[in-house]
Length: 410
Image 1: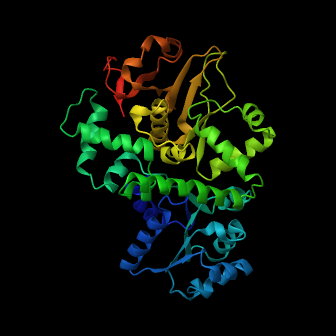
Image 2: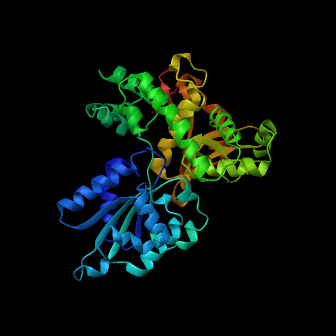
Image 3: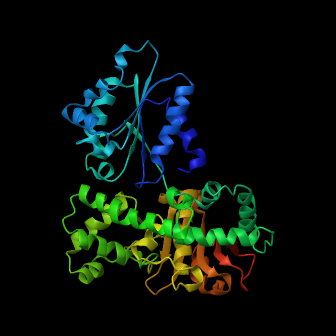
């Protein structure tokens, strides 16, 4: 869910009785979003309440019984006929049993009670989440800032149109090109956490990202009952150094001297706490296509770089291509949806970074190269011959000597 549409999407869902659940990483802007919603409800004279489960008195009360939430609000039954009470709950995951809390209130009070809640970590990991709330919730996932949102937060809205032109025209030479490139370099290194974007100096950005790693990842680990915290962080660091690579649980387990099942559980936790995501392979016509291991990406470049303590400029990095690929993954995920996004790889080493499935057997396929001079279309002949209905091209950051007709700027 992108910020430019997020508030409107939530408002549209207010008419539905199902809970609106906003999930995402810590410090990503979920609280700001629901406070904006509360302000709009106030302006429209709607009955609404904003509570946070970070308040110990509220948390203690609702842990005794879910209906104790009405000690802090109006009772839905007391509303005039046809009126709805909007209850906005921040950090709902702190409830002892958040799924049961939400289920009871829905079953007993919907549609007079409409809940809009933010949640992360323990809430989304809860095994009963899916079953107990089936048919009772709609999930809105909130991501770090996309690059156009990054420009907006930087008060550089006039550059957004120029950036779009750069994407559409490979040889774009507008007067703002250098400025956009400088800001994009910053984005690749420091990512899209709102507080980090708004920080004025690079040391401030680095401190905020290190705080996200040390404090908030630690909270996620504690809330999930992780016993080997150091191993959890070691695994996160190893994975940070392997973005865009296949995830082999056995290899990771051997490196860390851990059970493969433990590694698998830790990666599951990192997925559910919005640190990493796994990209599944695309299965098609060729028998030799590799069909098991997923590829790994981070939801934010800045958090990834903080894990590695590496904030060097792009010119001084060996991993700048990996950072660009990680950015492209996150952009395609927003544009086309995680379920439609894959990669292609054969047992003999042929690979295409991203494949987007579309209706009627059609699709898109992209290879990512930092400089388009590195893009050699003939290398991907096996894919283009096997899937002629897929439009194929290269996504690059820098203009080299590549074929401009096939190259797409980031």
